[in-house]
Length: 338
Image (cartoon, rainbow, N blue to C red; front, side):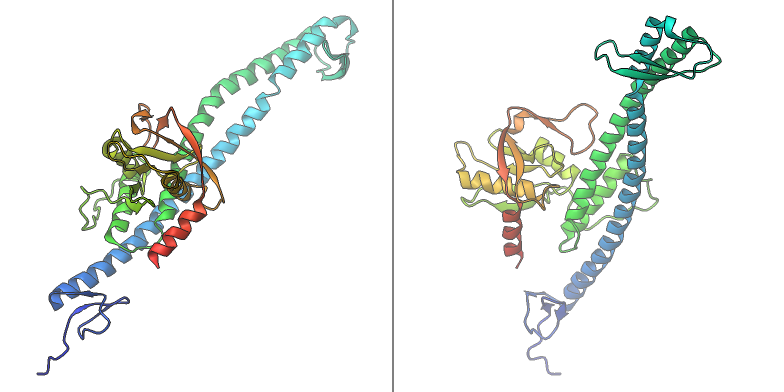
């Protein structure tokens, strides 16, 4: 049997046993086939899991935004509370102008002197009409007190799920096993937060989950830049990996990844390193399509996780602002991937 030229390995588009245009050599045919089919299976699982998560997040956010709109409308209605009290006060002050059977009365405002048209129940007297207006005022005030915390809760959930959705959008294509792991971390997080049920069987990728699979880049002066790929990685990056010498970056008031500029003791990054970090923080955020975005940076010791906060949520102090240019980071990433 002629075996000249036989060499198993991977090509850019697949695999071969003939040694032609190899991108990477395999020790044996079995290793080659195992690697190829593992990649194919991971790719299929990635597509399926990403679709499931995207649909779930879409449905959750749609329902929450309906609630948000309902609560906002109820708050707008409660804005009329003070006007009802004002009308009641005017009616009590001008009782002598009321006549039996009136369906409305026109009275001048105490402060502006402008006429105020007050609807009346013709079957009730002036005092009874004023009491009805006072009751409306109290009812709307109670509604505001009840609705405001509900709206705040819904807004918080929307903000959190938009952050999860952002992480999902960033990992849109399968390239390495770490991509599948990042999706599995998002799925596990949504299970822990009770947005997803616990499945009877939960597949796991063959990637070592104990390692930190952050996005990694190098600044112009060779400093390492780490970017969290999801909320779990953001928490690990900020509260476990970061040390006192590093600098922490995040878009200001905009959902985005946690970004860490790794620094050795005594190292001082130049402006171009700081700008590089800010550009990537802006790119890995909801401001990725903008030309510029505000990015804050501070020392990791000034970043805190509020008690009971959801994954990825953090507050900070002693921050400074630099303007990130996400398109610069995008161009850099495209160059690295080409």
